[in-house]
Length: 630
Ligand code: SF4
Ligand code: FE2
Image 1 (cartoon, rainbow, N blue to C red):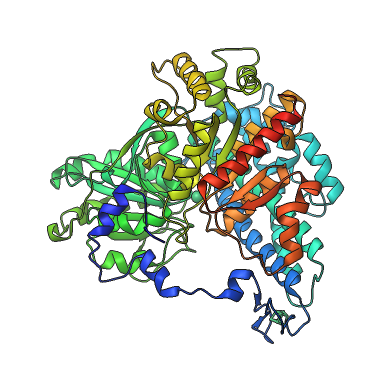
Image 2: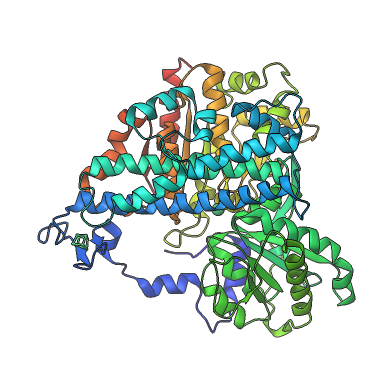
């Protein structure tokens, strides 16, 4: 790797890295060369006879139990996708518990978007006419509970209500519709333990099922309940990159995924601003990393500090007074790094603790109390900053975000109030928009930080492809200046520029809309699923027939594999920039990258060069356009 990062803010902070602890790129170098068996998916320690490893070029060609490469790879992949789905399901479940309490008792949380709740209830077959909103909410909670722990057989309510009808029929035919999330997660762990499934096709079907658990009981359910509690995002302007951390403010950096806590921190940072001023600061600046950042960015315009791979650099600016973490994507290295600075690292979830961090546990009843304490700790830390350790950058960009489905429909309906999707479809038909691509997912240290996200997207928008984005991909594109009107002027192709200018005008902006629409956090990939479902149903075609694709250019997390599996099951071509550990199973690899298309409509392809990846995606879009007669 020639460069660690293309992010100018990260690069500046990295140049003056003060140690003594290592950063993520140094730890990666220490790991090289990485284990070849692991990279191919050819190691197993599912039982006490192992660990076993398979030689792809000779003997041993089986584990002690007789498992061959395809079985080993398929079992490992199913476990990874299951873990990814479990993370999203657990996130959605925590949100459900809060919604349930908010409906039945006075407390720190309340319903913000009652309309969304009613619309959702209607879709789930709950009668809403003349009923009290709390009663509707309770019925909705019961439906959601069934999707986590339904007794006996059945199908996910959220999937049946929201997936394209054609897909539901297909998944039924394949026998992959989940009964309930907990049951499928349990079964997948059972299915992959020693002496169980030895059929790689059967293991891959189970993987698809867990991808659907992720898509509907994790992502879709999570987004829906979060919108009900905290509001559905609307257009909002903000800033991104480490330059949002400045010397005059108390800086609180939120990191993780669930907005239950970050919403409260935003609220308490406002309330306690006078305390910060008493301590000599101008104000309190809350900013974020990863998806909890995306949640508060989308709903409140809270600026984005950075994304996954540069999380350590937020502390290394010497300006982060408190970093408050909830769940997922939190590097264990943060604890030892924070010790080198004045930063208080605050863990808040019973399943995420770190030696040396301050643990302030979030709970429903204590949410306000806990958030107040966390903000007070940040204010107290502000006065302990060490001027010798300040390593700031002024790098930051401007952005327009908040592209929920509701936002998109509301902008389009200013052109056609009766059929809001019609103008979008017309632009796709006449070729001003060639297609739509979603870029999602993480950073991965194996790829120059943000490089593939940014360069892939620049290629696509120059070819008149509209890009929608979530997660750390959105953060990468934000820092590269791709989420503002100037980016449309600078990088969009002529057709895309024309339609974005028109949409900007009808949205009352006086400038074009950005060429990349930020749709939210990783669970908000469900919003992209909703757009695909709506487009396919409006046109009376399948998702597979649409000129669309998805990409996780720098994925690292098991959650990304789960999301990608769901997208393939929806019928999408899914690009990955990093090879998952599957190459040791030749038949498994052939299925995932080719055969899956016939069975599911979608497939994966792996390419780490942005121009080559954009070419494959563009050719795929052209083939789909041709299929639709465009
Ligand atoms: Fe080896 Fe089979 Fe045990 Fe895995 S399950 S460690 S391949 S004997
Ligand atoms: Fe995320």
